[in-house]
Structures are given as structure tokens and as C-alpha cells.
Image (cartoon, rainbow, N blue to C red; front, side, top):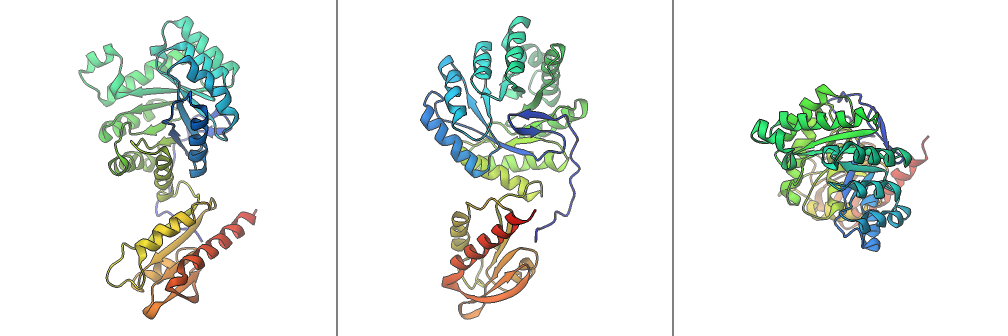
Amino acid sequence: MSLRPFRNINRKNTKVIKVGDVKVGGKNPISVQSMTNTLTTDIKSTIKQINEIYEEGADIVRVSCPDEASSKSLKEISKNVKIPIIADIHFHYKRAIEAAENGAKCLRINPGNIGDKDKIHDVLSAAKNNDCSIRIGVNAGSLEKDILEKYKEPCPEALVESAMRNIKILEDQDFFNFKVSVKSSDVFLSIAAYRQLSQVMNYPLHLGITEAGSFVSGSVKSSIGLGSLLLDGIGDTIRVSLSDDPVKEVKIGNEILKSLGLRNRGVKIISCPSCARQAFQVIDTVKVLEEKLSHIKTSVTLSIIGCVVNGPGEAAMTDIGITGGGKGNNMLYLSGVQSEKVLTDDIINKVVLEVEKKASELEKKP
């Protein structure tokens, strides 16, 4: 039993590209990205962080390559991780070539920053020869000088003009294996820029609110910005940018997609905020269950409601549900139907058992 979204989102059918074995664009699932914050030359730490990001549910990871040692470290890193790596390149064209030759599956660049046509040609040749895509990364904080002078300040039109200029550079070199982003730390600016860009080109879009901030404020800003665009059917891959552990970026990114019915992965918990009516400690119970069920990758819905006011109704729409009852006797629901009473002290173990059982059943279905 899965919750059905009240609105079917009509996604724009963009061009499909590949980042390693991950297809981006078209009707392919919206992928979730994050970025390492380790020193890339610290190969062991970088591999460890990428694997943690992968386990949380990331599809793609970005790694910064500010120098030759970093770009060449990708050779060992890429051999020891399970998701494709995007090499973050800003100015030096040799870093892009080195990254493509050492295992990167995508290069994050602004072609206009790379230099003359010969340098751009060399980067694109390396990308083609190594089956490497490109992300054109336009940022409100680093617009071209002439565009900034034209518009006086970052605005949607400025970001879109920069994006279209960089798109033309690649198209003129017969390179079409790319996606585009037009990021800003301002939610309204980002939304407007992405909407305008989506109307004038058909390449896949990478969504993000850049430098969104700390965990709480950044999650809120990203949810509003990305959520608004995703509801419009815009976006093929996303990153939640937080000043925090990148694992948390992936968690929030997946939650945004799950809340919109755009991704089904792991346990989706519906829980009440708790009040004086609660028959057990809902908040503590949910925290423990989130931890104990974090290993589940199959989509399972779970409701944890502290009393009978909303409990039965929520349980009717989830795979598994617990509703608080009197004298420590709480009701377990399976597929919306009352199953058995569960003592408060037994809730955690019982719910974990039932969720694991349900996940196993769903995994076996063709």
C-alpha cells in the first residue's frame, strides 16, 4: 500500500544524457546528488565519504579538483566507489582533461571560463574519448563581467543569457552530452531563472539553491526552491547544498522527492507531533525507528500516531501503522487493517520486524 500523490506532476521531457550508468533527463528518475567536503588528495577519506553518501541514497557525487594531484586522485577513488563522479572544474582546462582521463563521468565547467577555442576543443575531446558528460554550471555569484555590466546585478535574464552563451560554445563544437544549472542563493532568483531557461532549451536541468546555508535554513530554502520547480515539472537531477555533512544533503534531497511522489525509496514515516493525548512517546519512538530502519531501501509507508483521533485514518493509508491506545495497549495495523495489540515497550521491536517483513515481500515481487 503506497500513498498516492494528489497531483500527478507532468515532467518536461528533456534530452537524455548519461553520467556513468545513471541516465539523466527524459522520463528517467530524478537523481540525487551531493558533494564531498574532504580533501580530494586524501583518497581514503574521500572514498569513505562517497560510500557514506551512496548508502544514504545518492545517485551521483561531485568531487572538487582544484589541482593536478586532486584530478589524478580520481583514478583510485573511482575504482573504489559505486556511483559516478562529477569532477568540479572552474578555470583550468588541464584539470578537466586529467579528470576525464582518470575516471570522472561528468565535468562541471563553464566553457566560457576555460579559455580559447583550442582549450575548449581539447576538453571536449577528452570528454568524448572517455564517455564523459558535462554540466554547464552558471552561478549568480560568478557571472561573466560583460553580462553583469549589462544587467547591473544578477537577475534571471542574466543567468539565462550566460547559460545560453555556454550552451552555444558546446553546440558549436558538436558536443551535446550535457546538462545545465542556473544557481543562486536567492530562492526567487533561482526559481525564475530555471523557469525561463526551461522554456528556451531542452537539455536536462540540474536543480539547486547554492550556498543555501545551515541544516535547518538550507533545508527549508532548498525545499521551497526545488519543490516549486519540481511541481512545475522542471528538473532532472537535484542537489541540496548545506553547510553540513553531505549525507544530510542526500537525506533531505530524497525526502523532497518522496514528499512529491517523485521517488520511492526507504521507509516513509507519517507521524504526529504528539500532544497530551499520546499513549506513548511518539517523538522518541520516531527517532529510534528512523535509525533502526535506515537500512531499508525498499519503499514502505509507516504511520506512528499517538492516539485514536487520527491514527486509524492514517493507518488505513500506510503499509504498517501504530495507533496509541489506553493502558499501554496500542493497535498495530497491517495494510490498513487492525492486526493485534502491542504493548508500548514492544512497539519498536514489533514495528521493525513488520517493516523488514514487508520490505522483503515487496523485494520478491516482479
